[in-house]
Image (cartoon, rainbow, N blue to C red; front, side, top):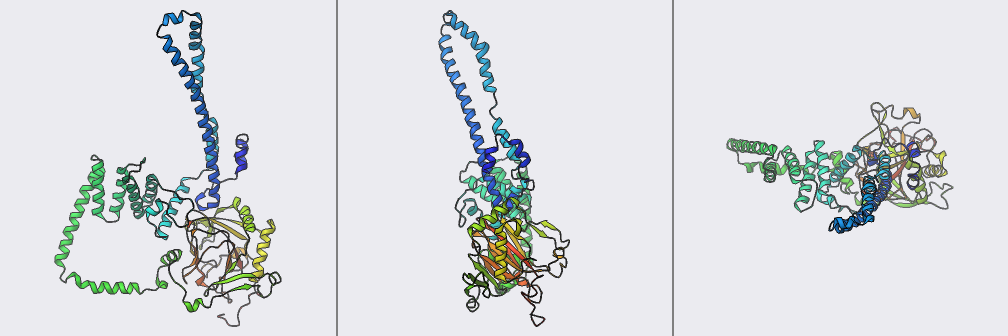
Length: 549
């Protein structure tokens, strides 16, 4: 990016042809690529400051001319004939009006915007799109739901682990509410319009007015069935703008509906034979029954979000006591006999194990350097067609790195083989992923199920027998890898890697390995993974003697 800035003034025509194509954009799906936008914006600020300086220089020259002429004309107009009686004054008057005022006109009309506008025009080709802005906004709403954050917390920037606290303006809140409204998401429309109104009530100056905010807010509340509150906000709107035609009509409609509700409620009360208190024991039993539901019976989405927040199943002390940490050399592998690696058990079933300090900062930097120019929106395999496509539930960008393109990648692949004992020749290439704003990957399986017989047919290497996952960054908040079916939650830890088998020794899929990447609340999440396939593992991980092994 610094190279780009140096060449910009002289080589604009080259940049237009040589700059990597970013037509796909999707900036919001990768924090790593979004960092380039900061340098782009810095370039534009520098260009803008140059334009301002040029304008100030021009105005300074105009000001000096005006000051000089103001003093001269003040003296001359006191005795015009006497002043022009001096032939030099007469000559200079002719010269000024015939030549110098024309020069001044040219100076005032001169355009100093060329450099800034040309720079801006070039850079705009690589700006985020409306989809990027909407994607980033929806990410904030997703984080709000997953981590149970109120609008005020997000607006004031009081998020866990933040280094650069940023406040949202009333206009920012209004824009979020508007995007939710466009999606017919009245719940979030209400939350963010209410926050915008609060900030306006607190005296914040804004281009957004209270009438507009109240209009959205009252309608969102009405759509959620709360007529009385909707009526209250609509009346407040009319206090600010008594001639607001839609609000006038809404007040009459809301009052009519409320009256209708009250009438219906009275009729229902009169028909009701048994006292209302009789229902209390039933409600109490229902509540007790609901409270008795175990974690395993909850909807997957709820389990996923609970685990992301650090809630949910906790391993019993007895099970926890069976987890160990150790120095590991994989049955005296020659590479690790003298320097075994640190290994710790993360979960018992499925067996999840973490390797500590298994990839160095230097190797991580190299992997990121190789991957960053190639990052593209992450894709998933369509279970019906088998075709790769983007999905809203996977917010990240990824790149594939082959072992032959750099010794570091080959070295990493060999390390995975040495520590797992599995063949890498049939494994997929190293996939590097960088998560975006609120980046996540909702619950999924890594292996192909029986209803996806052609999932990896084109590879010809069988199903995905195991997964190796490197964490290449720490994450300040969020971003855990969770297994909703069993309640396991694994926090990212830079330099470590997690490994698990997706298939049992008999080749059947282990459905307890269904996992997800929680939304990144604060920070930048980089991971890389190796999907290891069945072919070549026949002697390395043989089937058991029994069919069910």
